Amino acid sequence: MRYIYESVSLKYSSMRGRSKEDYLEIINAKGSQGWRFVCFSPIQARPKGVKGIELVFERAIEG
Image (tube, rainbow, N blue to C red; front, side, top):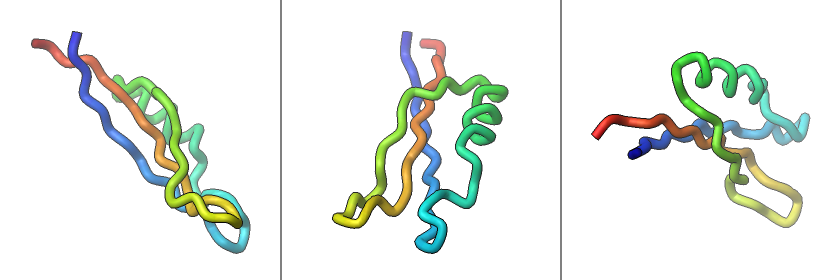
């Protein structure tokens, strides 16, 4: 089976230290479109923390 992958970037607010968007809402919305959540990865890790995360999704394709 072959897969395609897609990522969604969530930037963190420097004031609040977290994303403005709810990651669970994004995961559930992508899931309803046939995507499966695979993992997350930090964006631009710095000594004082990360600037955000990328959510990675996969979906099976025919062929």
